[in-house]
Length: 219
Ligand SMILES: [Mg+2]
Image (cartoon, rainbow, N blue to C red):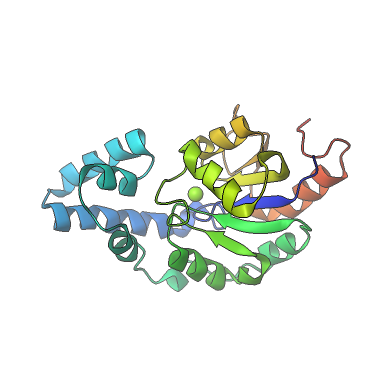
């Protein structure tokens, strides 16, 4: 089946980890728990670690255990000046321009945050759609249900999709469903069909995938 879609994770996939965006979001998530639940910072950290292991994200854990408003949480933790952390990436814009397939964002973050990041990076026009955490009914990656929901919204089959992620844990369900999986800036493992060191390499890799006989299947 021919490839038709490239699904991009947002945070630390479309920009590097050292940019510091997620570190600041992490500070805000901990602060939210300290303020709203009245926990010490140390306990808030422990809670977040546990939720990450057990539920996939802090938000999923909070929703399972407390009556919190997900929109309020997302607005709070994404309230940061993204433009102070990121700069336009013309090389990435050109790399995305080489990809003839439909490009969408598939993120555990909010649409507003995703849009701000794409705008600051100068790559927003390359994407036809953003699928955020609300689109998947607040079910986050790596829950299989989130991937099924995305495919349903996209009207796509897994075999038609490539998923690009910095988190190998989020590639596992995609791989199991039959997507081609690409890990950015990580160690090769069973979940990743391909690994690239820098997101700007995505243009060339997708071109090679499309040119290869039986496109979509890893070597
Ligand atoms: Mg990420």
